[in-house]
Image: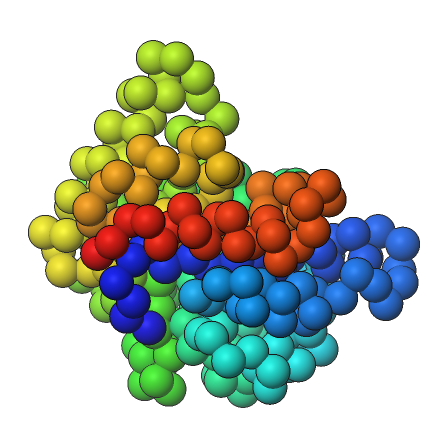
Length: 244
């Protein structure tokens, strides 16, 4: 989906996480996705984990039938998830690492270690018409290898930057800059995500190579006080002020 601004992917996982905490039928991530696209989201992102801790397969199936903007599935690079992605017919897959004990994704894929399996998965998904992004650490070498493996996009992990402050944050920002420049040189689209909020996102959006951001937690947190549509609308307006 080409738009003349930085695309906003809204991740609705945390809506499902609240639902799963009590085992209820609410709040509904499908409704959240509907409200998000109504408020200006350019993409809906969900992470179907192997342990199904928040988003469920039924959520994904309903989202595929109801979402009119591109649907981006974050998933572990394993056979079960590849089959689900193909059967569901999502628009994009973002391959991410998974650990059962982590609260959230803690870092990018080890592209070098997984290169053989990643290449096969990328080829399978692309043959089904599904675009593939790799969620990677801000390392130029990982960006270049991702491009060689056939990824059409890399999503740079911004969590280290988001969690840092002072000189360390500046250092992490420069890591992201170098990785984004490597993506442009390698001919892959560059996205960014993890830990981005209504304050720290501006330097990321200033990078002309960044075409897309995926944001969940900060939007859902803000929605507690403003309502979901308003929280998405505010972030969408920020992204749309950065033309591409």
